[in-house]
Image 1 (cartoon, helix red, strand yellow):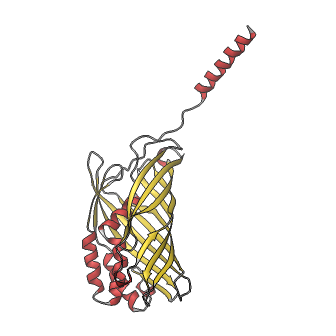
Image 2 (cartoon, one colour; image 1 turned 45 degrees about the horizontal axis):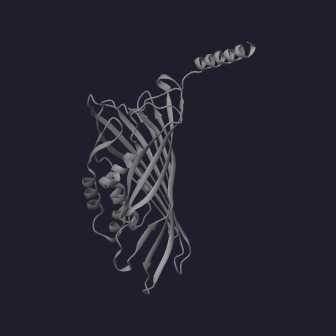
Image 3 (cartoon, rainbow, N blue to C red; image 1 turned 90 degrees about the horizontal axis):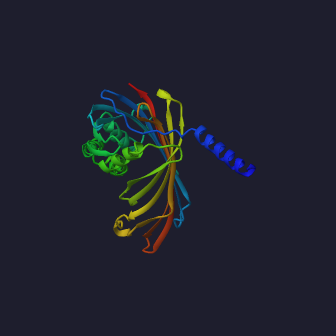
Length: 324
Protein backbone atom coordinates (compact mmCIF):
# COMPACT_ATOMS: atom_id res chain seq x y z
CA UNK A 1 0.00 0.00 0.00
CA UNK A 2 2.75 2.43 0.93
CA UNK A 3 4.66 1.58 -2.21
CA UNK A 4 1.57 2.07 -4.38
CA UNK A 5 0.81 5.39 -2.70
CA UNK A 6 4.40 6.52 -3.34
CA UNK A 7 4.12 5.68 -7.03
CA UNK A 8 0.80 7.53 -7.34
CA UNK A 9 2.15 10.53 -5.50
CA UNK A 10 5.20 10.65 -7.75
CA UNK A 11 3.02 10.40 -10.86
CA UNK A 12 0.79 13.20 -9.62
CA UNK A 13 3.83 15.40 -8.91
CA UNK A 14 5.20 14.79 -12.40
CA UNK A 15 1.80 15.65 -13.89
CA UNK A 16 1.60 18.89 -11.93
CA UNK A 17 5.14 19.76 -12.96
CA UNK A 18 4.23 19.19 -16.60
CA UNK A 19 1.19 21.42 -16.29
CA UNK A 20 3.16 24.11 -14.49
CA UNK A 21 6.02 24.19 -17.01
CA UNK A 22 5.24 26.84 -19.69
CA UNK A 23 5.68 25.98 -23.36
CA UNK A 24 8.72 27.49 -25.05
CA UNK A 25 7.95 30.83 -26.70
CA UNK A 26 7.51 30.67 -30.46
CA UNK A 27 7.75 33.33 -33.13
CA UNK A 28 6.99 33.68 -36.82
CA UNK A 29 9.70 35.59 -38.64
CA UNK A 30 8.25 37.55 -41.55
CA UNK A 31 9.27 40.56 -43.60
CA UNK A 32 6.56 43.20 -43.19
CA UNK A 33 7.16 45.74 -45.93
CA UNK A 34 4.93 48.84 -45.76
CA UNK A 35 4.26 51.01 -48.82
CA UNK A 36 5.99 54.37 -48.45
CA UNK A 37 8.53 53.19 -45.88
CA UNK A 38 12.09 54.45 -46.42
CA UNK A 39 14.84 52.47 -44.68
CA UNK A 40 18.41 53.73 -44.49
CA UNK A 41 21.11 51.11 -43.94
CA UNK A 42 24.86 51.47 -43.46
CA UNK A 43 26.77 48.59 -45.06
CA UNK A 44 30.44 48.06 -44.25
CA UNK A 45 32.72 45.44 -45.81
CA UNK A 46 36.27 45.00 -44.52
CA UNK A 47 38.52 42.65 -46.51
CA UNK A 48 42.03 41.47 -45.62
CA UNK A 49 44.13 39.58 -48.17
CA UNK A 50 47.41 37.91 -47.09
CA UNK A 51 49.55 36.65 -50.00
CA UNK A 52 52.49 34.38 -49.20
CA UNK A 53 54.95 32.17 -51.01
CA UNK A 54 55.48 34.27 -54.16
CA UNK A 55 59.05 33.56 -55.32
CA UNK A 56 61.34 36.57 -54.93
CA UNK A 57 58.75 38.66 -53.06
CA UNK A 58 57.97 39.32 -49.42
CA UNK A 59 54.66 38.23 -48.00
CA UNK A 60 52.14 41.05 -48.48
CA UNK A 61 48.91 42.19 -46.91
CA UNK A 62 46.20 44.28 -48.57
CA UNK A 63 43.25 45.68 -46.63
CA UNK A 64 40.16 47.43 -47.92
CA UNK A 65 37.13 48.90 -46.16
CA UNK A 66 34.09 49.91 -48.21
CA UNK A 67 31.27 51.75 -46.45
CA UNK A 68 28.01 52.49 -48.25
CA UNK A 69 24.85 54.31 -47.20
CA UNK A 70 21.97 52.46 -48.87
CA UNK A 71 18.32 53.50 -48.97
CA UNK A 72 15.43 51.09 -49.61
CA UNK A 73 12.11 52.67 -50.59
CA UNK A 74 8.99 50.50 -50.60
CA UNK A 75 6.99 51.33 -53.74
CA UNK A 76 4.15 48.86 -53.23
CA UNK A 77 3.07 45.72 -51.40
CA UNK A 78 0.65 43.12 -52.82
CA UNK A 79 -1.94 41.38 -50.59
CA UNK A 80 0.31 38.29 -50.75
CA UNK A 81 3.16 40.22 -49.12
CA UNK A 82 5.22 40.53 -52.32
CA UNK A 83 6.97 43.91 -52.20
CA UNK A 84 8.31 46.18 -54.94
CA UNK A 85 11.32 48.08 -53.60
CA UNK A 86 13.90 50.36 -55.15
CA UNK A 87 17.41 50.76 -53.80
CA UNK A 88 19.74 53.73 -54.14
CA UNK A 89 23.24 54.34 -52.83
CA UNK A 90 23.64 57.66 -51.03
CA UNK A 91 27.40 57.63 -50.47
CA UNK A 92 30.44 55.37 -50.77
CA UNK A 93 33.79 55.51 -49.00
CA UNK A 94 36.64 53.15 -49.92
CA UNK A 95 39.94 52.89 -48.03
CA UNK A 96 42.58 50.63 -49.58
CA UNK A 97 45.89 49.94 -47.80
CA UNK A 98 48.58 48.03 -49.68
CA UNK A 99 52.38 47.68 -49.38
CA UNK A 100 52.80 50.54 -51.87
CA UNK A 101 50.55 52.98 -50.00
CA UNK A 102 47.00 53.96 -49.16
CA UNK A 103 44.20 55.08 -51.47
CA UNK A 104 41.03 56.76 -50.18
CA UNK A 105 37.93 57.58 -52.24
CA UNK A 106 34.95 59.30 -50.62
CA UNK A 107 31.96 60.42 -52.69
CA UNK A 108 30.55 62.44 -49.78
CA UNK A 109 33.86 64.18 -49.01
CA UNK A 110 35.80 64.59 -52.29
CA UNK A 111 38.53 66.60 -50.53
CA UNK A 112 39.57 63.42 -48.70
CA UNK A 113 40.08 61.47 -51.94
CA UNK A 114 43.72 60.56 -52.62
CA UNK A 115 45.33 62.51 -55.45
CA UNK A 116 46.52 59.89 -57.94
CA UNK A 117 45.26 58.41 -61.25
CA UNK A 118 43.74 55.24 -59.74
CA UNK A 119 41.89 57.17 -57.02
CA UNK A 120 40.68 59.67 -59.61
CA UNK A 121 39.27 56.90 -61.80
CA UNK A 122 37.64 55.19 -58.80
CA UNK A 123 36.14 58.48 -57.65
CA UNK A 124 34.50 59.15 -61.03
CA UNK A 125 33.13 55.62 -61.20
CA UNK A 126 31.83 55.45 -57.63
CA UNK A 127 30.21 58.87 -57.97
CA UNK A 128 28.31 57.45 -60.96
CA UNK A 129 26.84 54.79 -58.65
CA UNK A 130 25.34 57.33 -56.23
CA UNK A 131 21.64 57.98 -56.75
CA UNK A 132 21.10 55.30 -59.40
CA UNK A 133 18.07 53.04 -58.98
CA UNK A 134 18.03 49.26 -58.60
CA UNK A 135 14.51 47.78 -58.77
CA UNK A 136 13.84 44.72 -56.62
CA UNK A 137 10.85 42.45 -56.02
CA UNK A 138 10.96 40.59 -52.69
CA UNK A 139 8.80 37.62 -51.79
CA UNK A 140 7.23 37.65 -48.30
CA UNK A 141 9.90 35.20 -47.10
CA UNK A 142 12.75 37.39 -48.40
CA UNK A 143 13.29 35.60 -51.72
CA UNK A 144 14.61 37.99 -54.39
CA UNK A 145 12.10 37.31 -57.16
CA UNK A 146 13.56 39.81 -59.60
CA UNK A 147 16.24 42.47 -59.84
CA UNK A 148 16.74 45.09 -62.54
CA UNK A 149 19.24 47.88 -62.99
CA UNK A 150 22.66 46.35 -62.38
CA UNK A 151 23.67 46.20 -66.04
CA UNK A 152 22.53 49.79 -66.58
CA UNK A 153 24.45 50.90 -63.51
CA UNK A 154 27.66 49.18 -64.64
CA UNK A 155 27.42 50.77 -68.09
CA UNK A 156 27.09 54.20 -66.47
CA UNK A 157 30.04 53.49 -64.17
CA UNK A 158 32.38 52.42 -66.98
CA UNK A 159 31.37 55.39 -69.12
CA UNK A 160 32.10 57.77 -66.25
CA UNK A 161 35.59 56.34 -65.82
CA UNK A 162 36.62 56.88 -69.42
CA UNK A 163 39.16 54.81 -71.36
CA UNK A 164 42.34 54.33 -69.39
CA UNK A 165 44.43 51.62 -67.75
CA UNK A 166 43.31 52.82 -64.33
CA UNK A 167 39.65 52.60 -65.38
CA UNK A 168 40.14 49.03 -66.60
CA UNK A 169 41.61 48.05 -63.23
CA UNK A 170 38.82 49.76 -61.30
CA UNK A 171 35.99 48.42 -63.48
CA UNK A 172 36.99 44.82 -62.74
CA UNK A 173 36.67 45.48 -59.01
CA UNK A 174 33.35 47.32 -59.39
CA UNK A 175 31.88 44.54 -61.54
CA UNK A 176 32.35 42.27 -58.52
CA UNK A 177 30.19 44.71 -56.51
CA UNK A 178 27.52 46.01 -58.89
CA UNK A 179 26.70 43.38 -61.50
CA UNK A 180 23.18 41.91 -61.37
CA UNK A 181 24.56 38.66 -59.93
CA UNK A 182 26.64 40.50 -57.32
CA UNK A 183 23.71 42.71 -56.28
CA UNK A 184 21.39 39.72 -55.99
CA UNK A 185 23.96 37.85 -53.90
CA UNK A 186 24.40 40.85 -51.59
CA UNK A 187 20.63 41.19 -51.11
CA UNK A 188 20.21 37.48 -50.40
CA UNK A 189 22.94 37.68 -47.76
CA UNK A 190 21.57 40.88 -46.22
CA UNK A 191 17.91 39.80 -46.23
CA UNK A 192 18.02 36.00 -45.90
CA UNK A 193 15.10 33.75 -46.76
CA UNK A 194 13.00 33.11 -43.66
CA UNK A 195 11.29 29.81 -42.76
CA UNK A 196 7.55 29.27 -43.11
CA UNK A 197 7.11 27.48 -39.78
CA UNK A 198 7.04 29.14 -36.33
CA UNK A 199 10.29 28.90 -34.40
CA UNK A 200 11.38 28.55 -30.80
CA UNK A 201 14.92 29.18 -29.50
CA UNK A 202 17.21 26.41 -30.69
CA UNK A 203 15.28 25.70 -33.90
CA UNK A 204 17.25 25.76 -37.17
CA UNK A 205 16.66 26.15 -40.90
CA UNK A 206 18.96 26.08 -43.92
CA UNK A 207 19.66 28.14 -47.02
CA UNK A 208 21.86 28.31 -50.11
CA UNK A 209 23.71 31.15 -51.81
CA UNK A 210 25.53 31.37 -55.13
CA UNK A 211 28.65 33.51 -54.80
CA UNK A 212 31.89 34.17 -56.66
CA UNK A 213 33.30 36.03 -59.64
CA UNK A 214 35.74 35.57 -62.52
CA UNK A 215 38.66 35.41 -60.08
CA UNK A 216 37.47 32.69 -57.70
CA UNK A 217 34.90 30.90 -59.88
CA UNK A 218 31.44 29.89 -58.69
CA UNK A 219 31.18 29.40 -54.94
CA UNK A 220 28.32 27.50 -53.30
CA UNK A 221 27.48 28.65 -49.78
CA UNK A 222 25.49 26.33 -47.51
CA UNK A 223 23.96 28.20 -44.57
CA UNK A 224 22.51 27.01 -41.27
CA UNK A 225 20.45 29.50 -39.28
CA UNK A 226 19.63 29.00 -35.59
CA UNK A 227 17.17 31.05 -33.55
CA UNK A 228 19.35 31.93 -30.59
CA UNK A 229 17.01 34.02 -28.46
CA UNK A 230 13.84 36.12 -28.21
CA UNK A 231 13.99 39.33 -26.20
CA UNK A 232 11.40 41.99 -25.38
CA UNK A 233 7.66 41.96 -26.07
CA UNK A 234 5.27 43.71 -28.42
CA UNK A 235 6.88 46.50 -30.43
CA UNK A 236 10.26 45.89 -28.77
CA UNK A 237 10.50 42.15 -29.49
CA UNK A 238 13.79 41.16 -31.10
CA UNK A 239 14.91 37.79 -32.45
CA UNK A 240 18.61 36.99 -32.55
CA UNK A 241 19.66 34.44 -35.17
CA UNK A 242 23.13 32.92 -35.55
CA UNK A 243 24.45 31.94 -38.98
CA UNK A 244 27.01 29.28 -39.92
CA UNK A 245 28.25 29.11 -43.52
CA UNK A 246 30.27 26.50 -45.42
CA UNK A 247 31.81 27.59 -48.72
CA UNK A 248 32.83 25.22 -51.52
CA UNK A 249 34.20 25.89 -54.99
CA UNK A 250 31.49 24.49 -57.26
CA UNK A 251 33.21 25.63 -60.48
CA UNK A 252 36.82 26.78 -60.81
CA UNK A 253 37.53 30.04 -62.66
CA UNK A 254 38.73 29.88 -66.26
CA UNK A 255 42.47 29.48 -66.72
CA UNK A 256 44.01 32.94 -66.99
CA UNK A 257 45.68 33.71 -70.34
CA UNK A 258 49.34 33.03 -71.03
CA UNK A 259 50.12 32.44 -67.33
CA UNK A 260 47.55 29.60 -67.21
CA UNK A 261 46.68 30.69 -63.67
CA UNK A 262 44.29 28.49 -61.68
CA UNK A 263 42.81 29.14 -58.24
CA UNK A 264 41.81 26.36 -55.86
CA UNK A 265 39.72 27.23 -52.82
CA UNK A 266 40.67 25.69 -49.47
CA UNK A 267 38.57 24.99 -46.37
CA UNK A 268 36.36 28.09 -46.26
CA UNK A 269 33.69 29.03 -43.76
CA UNK A 270 31.84 31.89 -42.11
CA UNK A 271 29.75 32.77 -39.10
CA UNK A 272 27.49 35.68 -38.24
CA UNK A 273 24.49 37.03 -36.38
CA UNK A 274 21.21 38.63 -37.42
CA UNK A 275 18.92 40.75 -35.25
CA UNK A 276 15.30 40.91 -36.44
CA UNK A 277 12.68 43.46 -35.35
CA UNK A 278 9.86 40.91 -35.04
CA UNK A 279 6.93 43.34 -34.71
CA UNK A 280 7.88 45.44 -37.74
CA UNK A 281 9.35 42.61 -39.80
CA UNK A 282 12.73 44.07 -40.71
CA UNK A 283 16.43 43.39 -40.26
CA UNK A 284 18.02 45.63 -37.63
CA UNK A 285 21.56 44.28 -37.91
CA UNK A 286 23.29 41.56 -39.95
CA UNK A 287 26.95 40.63 -39.48
CA UNK A 288 29.12 37.98 -41.14
CA UNK A 289 32.81 37.02 -40.90
CA UNK A 290 34.34 34.68 -43.48
CA UNK A 291 37.73 33.09 -44.10
CA UNK A 292 38.69 31.84 -47.57
CA UNK A 293 42.18 30.37 -48.08
CA UNK A 294 43.21 29.57 -51.64
CA UNK A 295 46.16 28.30 -53.66
CA UNK A 296 47.10 29.89 -56.98
CA UNK A 297 49.16 27.97 -59.56
CA UNK A 298 50.52 29.67 -62.67
CA UNK A 299 53.42 29.92 -65.09
CA UNK A 300 55.93 32.55 -63.93
CA UNK A 301 57.82 35.08 -66.08
CA UNK A 302 60.66 32.59 -66.62
CA UNK A 303 58.28 29.91 -67.87
CA UNK A 304 58.44 27.85 -64.68
CA UNK A 305 55.47 26.77 -62.54
CA UNK A 306 54.79 29.04 -59.57
CA UNK A 307 52.47 28.37 -56.64
CA UNK A 308 51.51 30.80 -53.88
CA UNK A 309 48.79 31.16 -51.26
CA UNK A 310 46.21 33.83 -50.51
CA UNK A 311 44.10 33.96 -47.35
CA UNK A 312 41.14 36.32 -47.58
CA UNK A 313 39.14 37.33 -44.51
CA UNK A 314 36.02 39.46 -44.66
CA UNK A 315 33.88 41.14 -42.02
CA UNK A 316 30.59 42.63 -43.17
CA UNK A 317 27.99 44.59 -41.21
CA UNK A 318 24.62 45.90 -42.32
CA UNK A 319 22.74 47.99 -39.76
CA UNK A 320 19.54 49.98 -39.86
CA UNK A 321 20.36 53.64 -39.33
CA UNK A 322 17.00 55.30 -39.82
CA UNK A 323 13.40 54.64 -40.86
CA UNK A 324 11.70 57.58 -42.59
